[in-house]
Image (tube, rainbow, N blue to C red; front, side, top):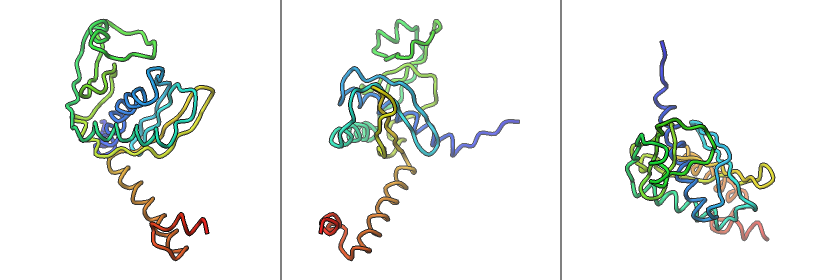
Length: 186
């Protein structure tokens, strides 16, 4: 008999739906040339590879993260429909992988922000994601960038870990947290 680990699956669902919001945010901030080139959706994190010609700046990372979290807070319904490929494309769905599609495709629409073809499992509402945090950005090949992020409880745990590290650094420097950078500079 099969058994589904409900907690693990729920965490994967959050990260999977967040990849769609991330993709849309990347296209809005960096441009329509951004296309998904690969991804990893795990219970503890997500990884998203995409076509782009230069590193993503800290200001752009902040803007992307803000856009995704804004969509999370808007708590849009995850509208999943089975349509013909042509109807899905006419409805604005993105399809990048050059896959061979059958007569019917599954389209995921998250508010007016993201519409893509996807056969995976998703949240019922974007608010289920809770919180989205980008933790790394890097280059993986010529013209391919990678963003790693966390959601939900994983994002909260990441923030708590960062706060702990900052507090430890402040203690070593014998300085309040707001003065850590200044103290390091000295």
